[in-house]
Length: 175
Image 1 (cartoon, rainbow, N blue to C red):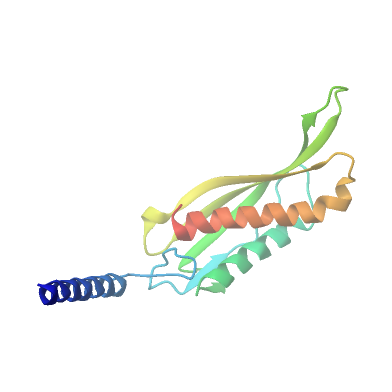
Image 2 (cartoon, helix red, strand yellow; image 1 turned 90 degrees about the vertical axis):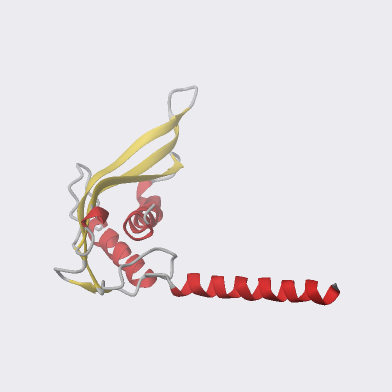
């Protein structure tokens, strides 16, 4: 009886191991982030995001574009090219805005909010159903007692990181 139970357990484990091996072997494509990249795709073209916001940070266009390129280059096997990539990402910065968010009793703001909004167009040469045009917006708050120019660089980096995560996830992780 014990021998038969032992045999059944071994057979079940063997079947489970075979099943898991088959599942992992059947994967079409995998990236380091768990997202999907078409196995035929080798390149991505990322155009500079011009700053078309009414309030312009003169370095935002270049720093945001660089952050997006770094994100994609660091987390995919894709090579960045100047044009005609297997994937193409383009867009523009459409909003760069500072607004009060936490009004105190004396009607002054305790906190201010920097909001950055980008419009993105993504195209996939191999699968048109993956193409999208979408607006992404993120913000960061800071104490109104702080001088904006002293925190601007940190806020822009924080927001750009969040925006590039959102764009990456939409394009390559299908969120």
